[in-house]
Image (cartoon, rainbow, N blue to C red; front, top):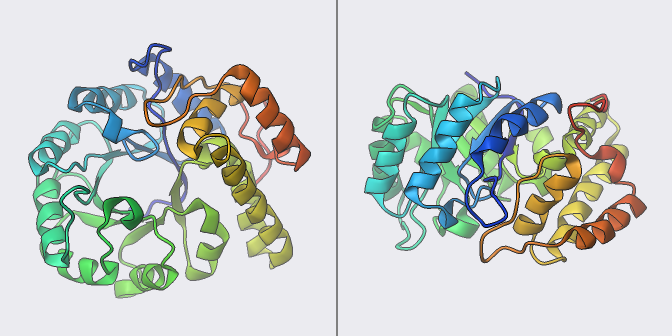
Length: 309
C-alpha cells in the first residue's frame, strides 16, 4: 500500500499536571480527519517520545487503536535500547497499521550494516505490519545514505515498506523515491521543503505542521499541479514563517503543541525541555500570524467548514 497525502505527526495530549490525557485522542482524530489528514504518526519527535515512559508510549498506542478514527496509524517504536524497541513493536503488532523506528541516538550507528541489523530485529517483532525506517539524522546522528540502506534492507526485512525521510538531502530522497521504479513508500518529512518535494514525485508527507495548516499545504500542491509556481512558493514561505514565528517564542515543539488549543484541540502542556506558554502569550501570537495572513489557512474544528484543497 502506498500512503498518500498528509499524515500528521501527532502530539501526546496531557493534563495540566503533565500526565497523559489519552481521552482527548478520539476527538483529536476526528479533527484531523475533518481536515483531510489521511493518517497519524504517533510516538514520534512531535509526540515527545523521548520524554515518555515505555508504559506511556503503549498507552498512546492503545488509545489511538481504540479511537476508531479511520486514520492510517503508524506507531513509532524506535528506542536507544533495541530490547525496548522490540517490546514496543510486539505490543503494536495487533493495534496499528504500520510501525516505524528511528536509529539509536545516544550510541550512534556508523554503518548501514548496523542500521539494517537494528531495523530487521524490530521489524520481525511485527512481521504482519509494514515497517518504515525513520530517517532524521539531525536528531539520530545516523547520517547514512538511504539508497544504500534500501538496497541492503530489502533482502533482510521482508516487511520493509519505506522510509519516513526527514532530511533536506533531496538528492538522496529522489534516488530513494525512484529506486526499483518507485517500489518503496518514501514519506517526505521536512515540512519547510514541502514544495521542493513535489517535482521529485512526493505523494505522502509526515509532519507536525499538518496539525495546524493542512489547507495551506493542499493549496500549495494545487498551485504546483496547475503550474503556478509563484503562488505555490508564496504559500510555502508562509508555512516557513509559521514555524519561525512559533520557534522564536520559546521553541517550536512546545509552542506549536500549545497552539492546538486555539484550533479546538487542547493537547495540554509540554514536558521539559519544551516550552509551555500562557493563553495571553497565544493572543499575541495569533495577532502576529493574522497580520501575515496565516489565520485563514488554519485547520478548522468539526463545526467549521474546511477550506477547499
